[in-house]
Image 1 (cartoon, rainbow, N blue to C red):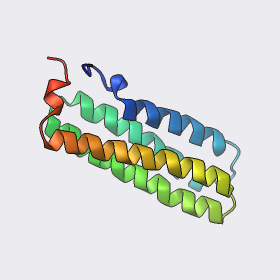
Image 2 (image 1 turned 180 degrees about the vertical axis):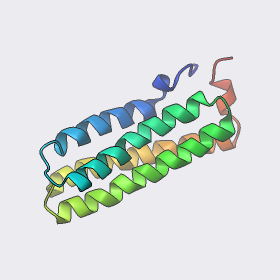
Image 3 (image 1 turned 30 degrees about the horizontal axis):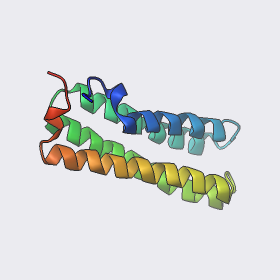
Image 4 (image 1 turned 180 degrees about the horizontal axis):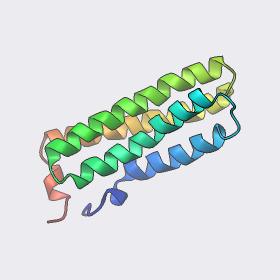
Length: 125
């Protein structure tokens, strides 16, 4: 399967699902600073995947995937705080953590593929 748009990337699709679920989980949270930061970091994952893809070069794409990976780690760090502050329970933590771990692994795999220059055969001309 050729990857023609960033929407074709499974990691982008999963990061969108994650962001929507995270938004819903924190929708009623009144700690606006915390809520704003975790939501912005979550959205940054999919946005950086999209922006990097559209840059057109593997080097730029890899750089934006690296930024997306950082945002993924930021959200992970924040959910540790969220559970300690009782903004989410342990079950919610486990679900979010698993999603982020999967997204992080997918980002790492995509970066590794870009490093080996194999991605060109999947991108359309």
